Length: 116
Length: 111
Image (cartoon, rainbow over all chains, first blue to last red; front, side):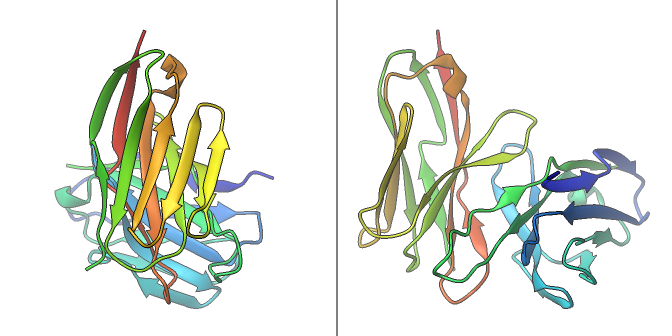
């Protein structure tokens, strides 16, 4: 299994440009998450999904959009990029968030985004 | 607002010494996660603590959970250089599918 994969690994955007960060998992996980990690900081939840067709906002959703058309894929869309969106973006997945299961998250390698 | 706080934020210690990292959280939750992040890398799961009094050990690391005190500890025994990394705790909010991460503790073990 490849686990959680993310593309691209690095990207530089100009202010106002848009892009999509790709995330895919091959573990048949229901739950998927997008986080951003600013330098020297912890992770902030942007959006999450509990299954195909179901998404919801996290702590810092402004400036981002997501979709979940399949169990495997959870792309993150940045519209009108701003310097404040310079960060490392991590996608994660977990098998189930129900209380009776281990809910540990498996993380992708990250996408380092710079907006100039 | 749910807060997850770790202390210390930075820790520099000598090889062979013991130390404890603390994780406090402000909401009801009966499970807590510890992750490790090496510089420039992704996060790797270390421990999942599922109930009050849970204790897990792996090598020189031992994690425990006290849900009544809303406190988890990560104890390092006889530190070695390979343990240098940033350690995060995370809590999943009861009744939601969200996880909140702590601020992280950057550990540096000096030879």
